Image (cartoon, rainbow, N blue to C red; front, side, top):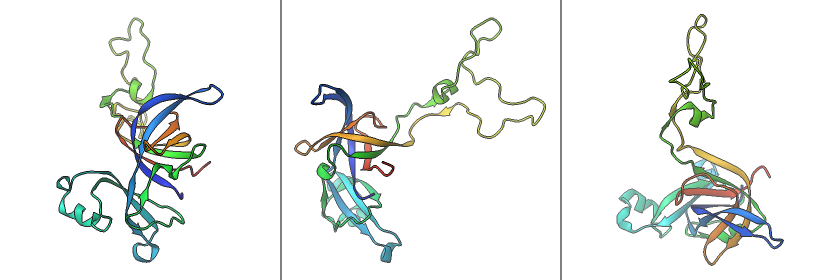
Length: 208
């Protein structure tokens, strides 16, 4: 990984290519990000670059945060580390959306939408029970939980109802359709995890 940026998901739309093909895209406000810390193998044991995104007033940060950001000269809300290989970045440097170009492939990490407490049909895509005589009123319940004789217990890993969503999700190999430097946005083909205005992390594809 040698390129990365923090962004905000703005929503989805569609664009038309030169040959008339309609492409669904996700619009991401990518940067501007500021390098807030550079970690080295000699001092920290590994190499990484910490980026900051979304500037806020000083009153919205506490003293430890302000002290940490003092060298970079910014007051940002979101910080994230990227293990960039061979990146020549110094504290205070800016990273903008034109780091990426149209035609490149990227991996995007975000936090999926929350669905609260959900049943097995919504959470695990399981089938409902038959809606015939003798089944109800449990058509959407989990069904048989395990053998009655041996081992007489529910086996580990059973798909059960529970909290669904709000998990870190990474989508691989999304193509960059367009980069608009004036607006500071990147248009990526396809869907990106997360709700509108949620924070996402963009890096160049590692498996492409």
